[in-house]
Length: 361
Image (cartoon, rainbow, N blue to C red; front, side):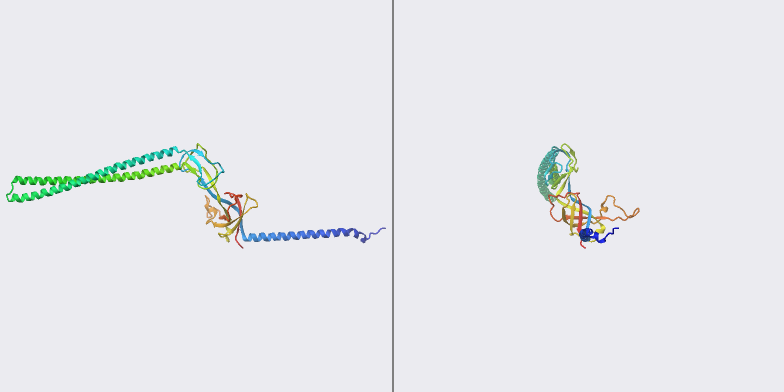
């Protein structure tokens, strides 16, 4: 019978055990390192979360200016294309100038007519003033004649009492005095009539001058309307949503397209109301844009809205009606860039943003 010697197998198992020991040590080291790395990043992430308020409910905002004509008319030329960059004041659209040009001509002719009316009224006023002066001179002469006739009558009356003159001579003096007094009354009435005519002439002059002012205003307005036939860019930016072609009839105030400013952009982040306790204007912000993976932008909190976003909705919720369910509200926070926009990574309104505000511990 053959018996097995336990010591006979040891030489074969020894190398295998020796090989397993370093492998276990390596695996143990890797596991420990993984635990340490995980703990490190967990602590870093925890500290970051404690010092920051984050949200992915954010987007880029910017100035979007609608382009609309100030007058109605047919479009003769469209000088831009969709998505083309334009400068402020650059001509974009031309509207038919013929009708506004005719209005300028009509207003100019009306102004000349008003000026002619003023010349006529001024001439009539000069004549009325001359007539008034003549009437006043005649009245003064008639007053002198009337006073002389009255003096002669008084003298002849005394003479007649002394039987120095005849009754006929006294009657002649009386008639002369009456005639002089009547002529004086006529002269005075002529003065009044001449003065009234002068007042009417003065009113006509004032009316003609006012008419000239009105016609000048009409002409200026017509010229202003003529300048509106050239529609220019209100701001510098990119043409978007173009909706106009040559030959199209456009109405005053009709939106033809929009211009999106490329020189100024900001972020509106809708943070939960529970995240606002430590948030203040001026705090640093880091944010990423979905359009540019791996790129981080720097900014700062500019301001916090005075009400939740729901308050500005078309139909804001009323918690006092129906079955009340408490919902955490969001408050818009405006974030401005800390540096000039990168032309290689333009921020366009509507882009999705992940924002983190450094609110402190």
